[in-house]
Length: 383
Image (cartoon, rainbow, N blue to C red; front, side, top):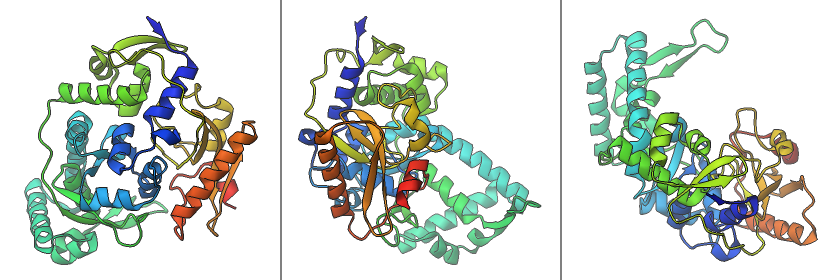
């Protein structure tokens, strides 16, 4: 069994995740393909993750890919999390995890509406059909506009009854979410700036059906091509699959020896990795690289985790040097990007990190970004 050391793993991150300056690319689609799936729970993450890896950083290529060319798609998928994925991978992601999640979401919606409003599945189907017809008539619409066309969407259910946070909730948000999960509608350009989460919607066609086992095997292969060598525990955590499904998906992959045990790579990928030129990067909260593996000791000191991750395990903004997390950063209200190193990396590294911060300030312009999930160091630096 081939032994792959920490240095090789870090070198692979620099090249495959397009963080080395010489490997930066020109299109948002190329970046998304290299990352496999870009976290999209926080809308800003998508733009900042991709921009960090572009030859010419900016939000425009991502907007074009999402809303004009529609070559990138948002799906609720792995671990019931929102991701942006390349068009060719969307049916695989949907077949491997999205279809299962959509079925669960529909079952929960039916229960929610039956208990809250007395609706049965026939009534839900009627409202969904009316919603789709209204969307086709408008071309695209916000949830508020759809509620104007379909009054049933504005019916309300009391949630958390008797609690201090009791509230009334329109049923529109849950119905729209399930229609999106099933691929019958999709998000278009939001209101406001590119970091807004107030999306418009348009009709769509569900992805072609892909057998579950085939979809999981292909997603595992694509993930290993970018994140390998990695362990079965890493893949299980990243996908949210059962251990049995994970092992089946890894069948046929090549085994390698890692410090933490048996790892996997795609066949023929166990050779040495070329060392990239020195590189620095400022990555946003929930970026796909720090969120790519369950076991992180080989690129992140356990001592740094309490400062750089929140209590739920969400990564905050991180500073990288040559395949290792060495600090964190934040943007202040005046637009300044500030960073703090948690390790001594030397003057040359600090100069490259400072250059990355200036680049980030330049393309963000007047936009102010605050992570949706805030890590302790980011909170401190932002003040």
